[in-house]
Amino acid sequence: MRTIFGLTLGALLVLTSTAVAQPAPWARPGEEPIDPYAVTDANAGAEPLAEGAVFEAFGGAEGVSRIIDDLVDRSVIDPRLEEIFKPTDLVRLRRTLKEQVCFILGGPCAYTGRDMASSHKDLGVTTAEFNALVENLQGAMDAAGVPFRAQNRLLAKLAPMKGDVVER
Amino acid sequence: MASGLARRIISGGSLFRQLAAVTGLWLAFTAGTAGAQETERSGKLLLTGGVSSIEGAGGGGLAPWALITAYGAAGQVGANLHATVAELPDYQFRSGGIALGLQDRLELSYARQSFDTGATGARLGLGQGFTFRQDVLGAKLRVLGDAVYDQDRWKPQVAIGAQWKSNDQPGVIAAIGGRDHEGVDYYVAATKILLDHSLLLNGTVRATRANQGGLLGFGGDRNDDYSLQFEGSAGVLLNKRLLVGAEYRTKPDNLGFAQEDDWFDLFAAYALNKNLSITAAYADLGDIATFEDQRGLYLSIQAGF
Ligand code: HEM
Image (cartoon, rainbow over all chains, first blue to last red; front, top):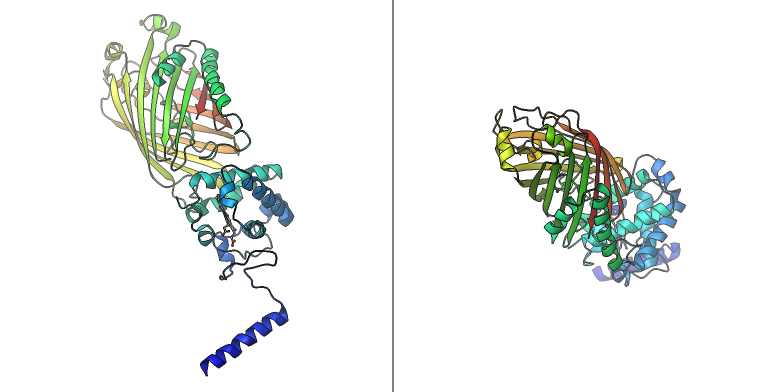
């Protein structure tokens, strides 16, 4: 009895979800499959900035998108980091990073990625690698003409994530 | 090799010859590592080890900070050499030395300081060009906090340290009322980088008996006990390579023959890259051995690897 009820409920769920054609909130077409997780802005690991000036200084969502693409481009060819990023789904990484930075800068974005601890679990990231990524981010922000003080507003939000990202 | 080099830097004469010696060394070093230009080497972020303070420890110009010198992160060792000159109206101060940062946890440093009395030496009755020399061995241990990463809490990075100082002029020191030519300073330093304000703040409390940092010995006819002194630094990061700020360092006044003043400076520390940084300061060292208003230019070059 219970199984029949369960199966019916399951079938119903599948039916409704295909009917509305909503993708799972944790995944997007064109990305590699990923185990489900609870989607919440809290996964971004920082409270968003209250005022809009810093987001403006980054050039809004478009500026953030260009900066993150540049950051990823730099990091995958950086001899200090390339090994770590080899198996990574870069389509997903670019999307979630853009969401995260846009959200933290107070932009009109929701973060749908995983939290920092589970995203970096078992990667074995070192402090030196963390700093290398920050340097690449600084390089990308410089290239985009983001003023130094605005850059530091973002870095101040990211710096405390070291505890969740770095394992060694 | 290190102390030989330090000695060569110190006895090198002119400021430019000293800087050239270090720059040459740096060029020789970078020639071997060329290619790693675009992406900087691993380790810490620019300027997060401070520069070389006058006693050799990582810090500002005048005060040691809680930051561990050089660009070694956790799991790494970093090292640097420094050469410093301060041109004062009646004296010239020089220093050269080496410092190691281990795992961003422990710092070991050695500096050899020279305090050249030049023409003033004759007027002090010491003889033209009379020079006090002092060796300073330093150790600093980071005990809590992280100035760079703890941006979500007020807690500063805190370090404890000691500096063992030995001056080579016991006779003159005794003659001016000093009690010892050797002494140990102990300090606690707290550093906070407020990244969202691009600010660096440091406060250091030092227990010391040193007269003019030990260049005029330790303890004196007026006071022979340890006293607690405060050293404060504040700097603004103007960009990732340039830190400008001010420092204030209180000092004991142990000797009867001459008043000793607090030290003050305005500094700019510029990191060309992770291998080379330059600090320029306007330093006001007050009265020194009866000669008043010792204000002048302080220049320091630091080569790291
Ligand atoms: C504050 C610094 C960092 C932030 C904000 C950050 C952010 C992110 C985000 C949003 C994701 C995707 C999460 C998801 O897929 O749901 C991610 C994944 C990843 N990050 Fe980071 N990251 C940081 C530091 C680092 C560092 C220093 C490294 C390595 C040097 C690194 C390597 C990776 C890799 C390899 C993945 C993909 C993991 C996978 O495929 O499962 N991250 N990071």
